[in-house]
Image (cartoon, rainbow, N blue to C red; front, side, top):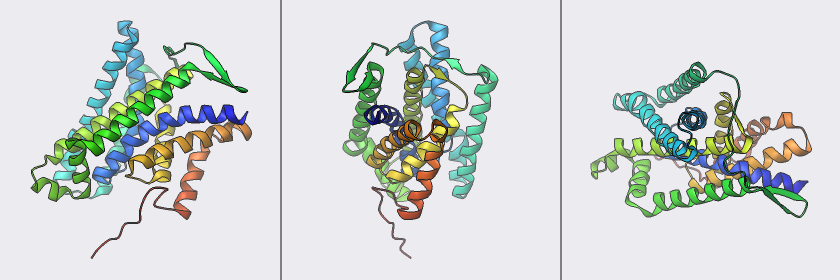
Length: 291
């Protein structure tokens, strides 16, 4: 029973990790809590489903939804946040703006597609096998493999490429990066595009895993990825991965051994405990503000 819950937790936790990576990248570059990330997760799943119903080809629809959700992330930065940044608005204004964009996307999806849950096709259902007493589906294996591959690719991009170096320079000191010839607006926009694409992939994978999507799926994932990022250390890429996996395992263990009604409450519990005892997270470091 415990092994089964751990396997289920690793599967769902890997999808949390994907969204948390995008969340922590945006925070690392702008020091901005992007509340719209959960809505992009939900939007990506709906776009995948609606494009599939329109075209009949799931994989083409999946690729199209990734592009469209990445574009939505770009528009959030270009139309809503860049103007505030150029005007020197306080960070609280940008945070409230992302919250407003989240509500706008949620209501837009509700108007276009309705508020009821929708069945989602599982194109990864190739059967299942057993490990001891645990039953593992190939859907879980593929989701975990896709998440691991994407996390590895993104880590290589961030730490081994010129784009990643520009992202890290922008995160460390935006003004100095601009003076060194880095187009910081372009780097920030690219970060939002990557975050949107990752959210879309994660939302679609979760839709296939549960064979269902609904409008409210974005609101709860928002708190879970926030708790995952806090647990691992906000702004730290490996921390987002570990935090997402830990959140997934904790959630499924609590649901399996306590009550499924408490599975969503665990995110808030983890958030409170981490903030009380280790505010910097598992991999975060205390920042020293020099005067």
